[in-house]
Image 1 (cartoon, rainbow over the protein chains, first blue to last red):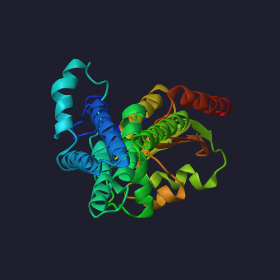
Image 2 (image 1 turned 45 degrees about the vertical axis):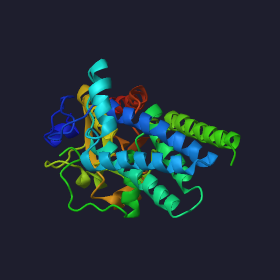
Image 3 (image 1 turned 60 degrees about the vertical axis):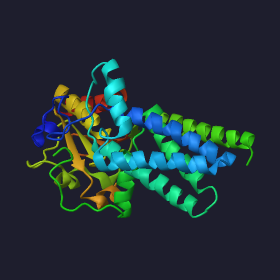
Length: 175
Length: 153
C-alpha cells in the first residue's frame, strides 16, 4: 500500500503538489487562455474580412504575450498580472495547485504557431495570419472552456517523434 | 472575403472547436478493458518506475501511471490514484516519467499523459485510462479485480 509520492519521497500535501517547485493557481492559465482565445477569434475575423493590418497588429500583440509568458513564466506577464491583481482576490482559494511547466509549454506552442503565422503574413503569404489564429484559437478555447491541456498530449507525441529529447533520466516527474 | 463570409467562417471555427471539446470530454478518463495484452505485462515495466526504491507491485492490484514533465493533469491524477491506493489494501500506485523513455511511449502506444494501466495481483493488464481518470469508473473497474483476488487467497 504505497504511493508514488511516498516512493519518491514527495509530499502528498495539496499545498505542495510539485515537490520543491512552487505550484500556481490553475485558474490563472485558464483565465489567460480565455483572453487569448477571444483575441485570436477577433484576429481570425479581421484577417478573413480583409482588415489585414489590424489582424497583423493584434496577432503580434498576442504573440508577444505568448513570448513573455514562455520566457518569464505564466504568472509574470500582463494577462497573468491582471488575473493575480484583479481576478484571484475575488475567487475562493484554489483546491489544488498546478505545476507551471505545463501551461508554460502551452504558451511556447502558442508563440510558435502565431509567430510562424505572423512572419508568413508579413512576407505576403495569403491567409497565413487567420489560419495560424484559428489553430491557436482552438487550443486556447479547448483549454479555457474544457480544461484540455495541450502539453499533456503534444509533449508526449513530440517525445515519441524524437523532436524533444530528454538529457538524463530523472528521478521522477515531481522531483 | 466579405464581412458576412468572414463571420460565417469564424463561427464555423468556433463550432468545430466546441464539437472537438465535447468529443474530448466524452472520452477522457474512461476505463478501457485491455485484458490479455502481453506487451504491457507489469514485470517488464517496473524497472522504469520513478523513485529511488525498487518498485514493488501491489499484491491485489497496481495502478501504473505514465506522466511527463509538462502535464497539468498528471499532478492531480497522482493525488487521486495515491488516495485510491491508500484506501484499498494490496493496491499500489506507481508512476513512470516518460520523458527519458520515449521508446516506452511508442511500445505502449501512449498518445497522452496521464495514461494509467490497471493491473491485477498477478501482474496482468486489465484496464487502460487515457487522461485524468474518472474516479467512480476506476473504482468499479477495480472492484472485480479485488474481489477475485480475495476469493483466490
